[in-house]
Image (cartoon, rainbow, N blue to C red; front, side, top):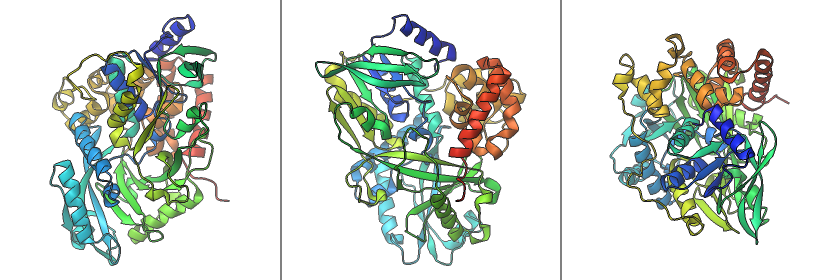
Length: 530
């Protein structure tokens, strides 16, 4: 990642009239934009990524954390999307162990509900065939009770077991950006593209507003790629009034793991509408999700869960675990993300919209939107293919891996805890060695029930373009979501780190703490009951 000093250095050069001309400018710092930057740099292009908020601020830090093939897309007959997703899932599992990890899923079979055991068996047989693995079986109620203590099985006919994968989505974005920057790419957060520049009705560059320091810059490039996801129409609307993206909100609850310890994912059908509800482990907590609703609010204001969604998810959980009844007071935190779905019909059930991605070219602006977290590499390749006529000749390459292999094994990195070491290698690659080398033994201790440590916080503050405290607590780490009261127990330690690494004084620390607590209360906790 760009160090804070490198970020300021690049901005200073731009203000001085240098580094203004690029082969490709990518707008949007989520997983799609990061993927485009990675593939552009690989091809030898001088490439710059610009994000108006923080990296992964939007959808890419608020997904359900699943790298999956899309079982319900297969059930709906979307064989192509499922096949591509499964191939990319297996690639990510191979390239980034510790960041993307296989996990067991149990799909509870309700009596009288579709799909039943036979239909699910057929679907999972095809699913595994497309992934080139054999990884599914039937599970009886007795085994299900052992796997998920407290589950109510009187209306179940067992469950179907299969596997998919889990990820820290924000760290996925940051790792892809790191690979890009290590190979010559540039990325700037808190730099908003306020306008596209044109000549003879063709895009020639962008006007950028520096959110942190103020001022504007004009940059040129023969190709501008709009990878802003749910925000894509805003940039396209400079040329066309057309609306193509249908923003859909998915919300989640986080509870302390001791209220319902999980090692695997349980999927059941909600009693109200028969949509799938997931209960699963994540970062030392248990998560309940997700909803699927049209998001009508201003996209520039962070998405947040509604009281209706909160109750819906509590009802879905309580129907399955009646002995572990949850109420609002049990909830640690929440998150809500807006999916960029290519809308075909606003009257259509949001859950039935296709999850394909699409690309458009408007007067030289290449827009890509839609798709899934899992297929970000393929989406990036399609965006670059659409831009190809306006790009210089690409340099040849033979290695198409997204992630370079670390030069050290997990066992050699932390002999006493190789599982945790693999987690660090997955998130940071070879930089995991420097993270541990630059931190004290005390800062390497895991915090609470999470696997995060203060060493990661110090590294992020020093090297990962942290501008605000919420960058550190909600995206570089997820401590603000996984600890009680937004992570208040570590505020004193973070104050020392931020003052040392970011040059904040006590006044700035207090301002950042107030900003963070306001963001957490409004967008990562519960809405007030009216």
